[in-house]
Length: 340
Image 1 (cartoon, rainbow, N blue to C red):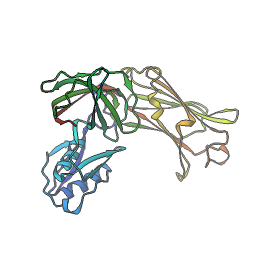
Image 2: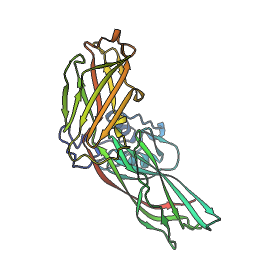
Image 3: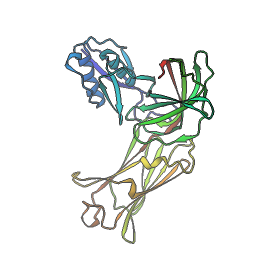
Image 4: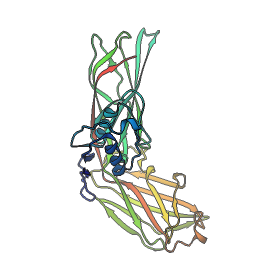
């Protein structure tokens, strides 16, 4: 028996012009239980199976994506794939209704129909949940999916126009699509094709700065992203860490109010590595201007709890920020969608 996992893109080889690539998983297994166990080991997931499912025969593509492999587990086990906070599990219930586009998965969670007696029209809300691979930063997306094709028998259905963009938080995003004209007697939609523009990066970058007592800037660069760590400053009763980031020239455009960098993380590590201090977003001020970012983290003058007297000698700073970003169009297809 042989298992392997293949990452299509290696660190340092990612171009901002390329779309985000999915994790590709290659494995050979005789039973579902063996496949799930090794998948957990390789990806850091914690999927469990009932004992009666573990010895089921498992047939699958030799090499496939993260989400398609999870769909194979769902099909083989006749259970439901549930994803919460980026963590997949298999639970008892009907299989999920979902479509996969490489590193992304769009799941239809519910369809609610109601009748508006003022307009004498039926209104329907389609609630979707978009998931992405845990190691991929997603910075911005359309606020609603766009319908590119709808096959509905004997009905003229109108879908609401997109309203703008949103900045997701975490590893999933709920999206609501509204439509009118769907007959209440209809039992299914034959086909629904959707598109969604997202701004994402292939991975998170980790920058380390080893000397926090320097009186000049420290510079680091990874995959075309440059970070300057500026000398510490004391202002009244506060101590400030500040960093300046510069992204490649083909960085996607964001509006001034779309502050994507608030999800970045700063950590302080003690000389003996016994203490790791996570800087809370409430302690930070982050401003983005095109491809440039200015981040300031502020603490009491003597330093955060765990730093003796504000002495930063030997301490290290780690800063996490997305890699080069790209805008890409996702495409999803649903067939034979049941209606309430």
